[in-house]
Length: 213
Image 1 (tube, one colour):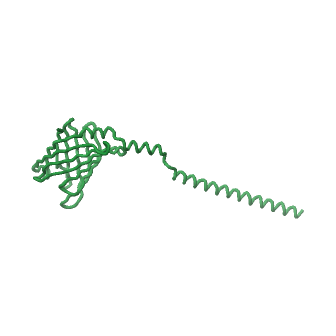
Image 2 (cartoon, one colour):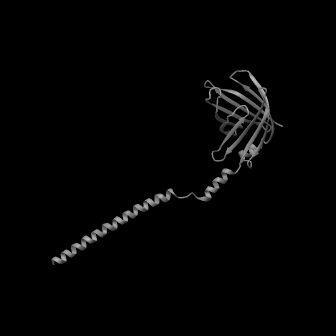
Image 3 (cartoon, helix red, strand yellow):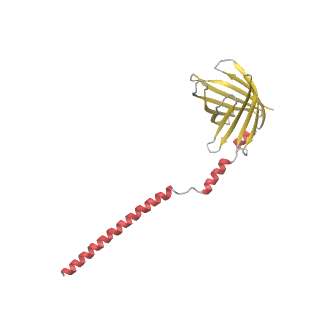
């Protein structure tokens, strides 16, 4: 009888130990599965078809690019400058040759004329970013070594585009904000106004009236 009791006790202990081991294995398996699930979510690749669709929409010229393409051609530019608010106006003139580049995705304008008695040459680009829904303009010329970059949006009600950026003042080397307002007056007329900041106050520093030939 004693031997039978000992045998039964050993079987109970063995069964209990086995249950604990099985439970531990199940819990460990669940933990591993949980980790695998999190990893698989983190590493889950994006749908290739959705990626391709997004890139195609990003690269495809749309109505904003058509609006830029409407300006293709040669424009006479009547330029007026002010050194400060209420200051004497200085006049200059130039010619802008505008075209679309890179499959109609960007506008490029090349300027040639005379400014302050010196030959003037400049180049601008205009882009509409399908992803950010905003315009970006750049400008460089032979009167300096910097690049002006501004971004903004077009208002269909006013037929104008407001762009904001920063430029470096060559006198003190500091960055100052500037603002451009580009208005579509009619099919053959454009107006570009630039506003600089001096002593913390914004003032109109330039106006260009463009007439298409």
